[in-house]
Amino acid sequence: MNFAVEHIGLAARDTVALKDWYEEVLGAREVFNDGKSPPAFLLDIAGRLMIEIYPGDTSVDATGNNKLAGWRHLAVRVDSIESARAELTRRGVIFDESNKPAGGGGQVLFFTDCEGNLLHLVERSEGPMLDRQHHEGAARSAPPWQRVSGPPHAPRRL
Image (tube, rainbow, N blue to C red; front, top):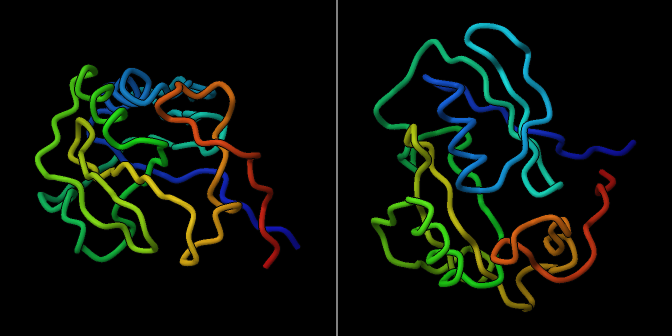
């Protein structure tokens, strides 16, 4: 049996504003809108992963706390953190922290979306800690600062 991640779900206080943020800042593309009020969306991120944005009914102040139990952040793989930082800064992203070492090698840089959800850029070089072939390859349609070289990975068998 094959298992592959299709999408992650993200409950939002304002689904339209959050959808717009992901489209404008990360180049996401809307692939589904349920037409309800408030609407729910499926967004494609560079042909690799979809994000489902749907109405939330509860929120907490600690949304951006990386130590809060549960799913905590979306990691966005880039060739160059500095190039990606410059591009995202032009798109209105504010970076409050400096680069940090990444688990498994490389470096990360954290930021938040317009609702305080945590994301980070991750730049990795080849090394023994990670099998790079499972992490390489963004869709050819991704912006240059978001692309990595190599073929897209296939679903892993469990």
